[in-house]
Image 1 (cartoon, rainbow, N blue to C red):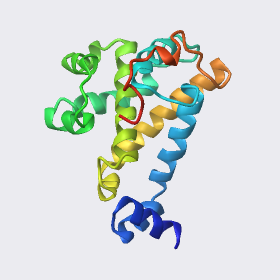
Image 2 (cartoon, rainbow, N blue to C red):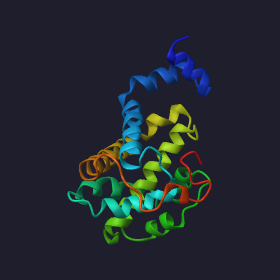
Image 3 (cartoon, rainbow, N blue to C red):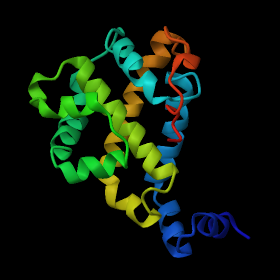
Image 4 (cartoon, one colour):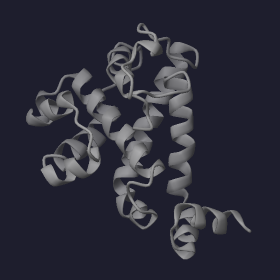
Length: 185
């Protein structure tokens, strides 16, 4: 059995859709970028409770330039003004801070709010892709959003790698995160 056949069977998806997806480099790039993002920016394991700490740290990093994140930030801020899209992104999860950020005008967002919003979007896209909340056939429908997630992860990885020697050191131990705040939620 080839990888494509196995992957299609495992995901219970059409083999031709899987082959189409795997031919598109965007999906592969997202998976590689996520792996680097998680290992370089979050010591190997992203938890939703650590997104805020990372946002606070990265905006203080030498080399942080808000303008590098504004295209993605504006796109996602505008996109999730639509409550249906926001609900689809969050997939039964609630996050009051994210909801509050979306009530503000984009130009009024602080650096922290911009970064936090982008981290939540990346985290949720990852969950929706990895856990099959979205069928494989829909992945390529979100190409623009996934491309923006990729460019944002690249920025965060580069900032984290240069400034923090490849590993973000948490002020709050990971064990202090509440139960259930793992990526696999």
